Amino acid sequence: MTIKYENLHQDTEAVRRTAYEFLGLNPQTARPLDSRESRTAAGHAEEDPTCFFRKGQVGDWENYFCDAT
Image (cartoon, rainbow, N blue to C red; front, side, top):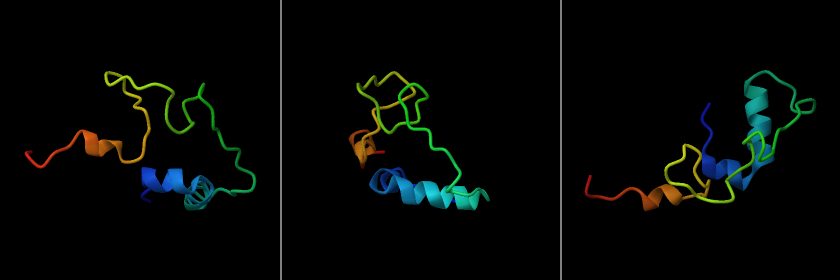
């Protein structure tokens, strides 16, 4: 199963439901985690380029890639 970050932001519930079904779980009984404390919420309040957890902005990867490579 492939989950694109852009799709997750666009329609979180549909992607979550598809993932649960792929795993053989009932989406109706699954309890979603969506909090800053558990780092399961999309994005972060501030960006720290040295941190593993990036800011979580859709398309931000384009700022770090160029045609020269």
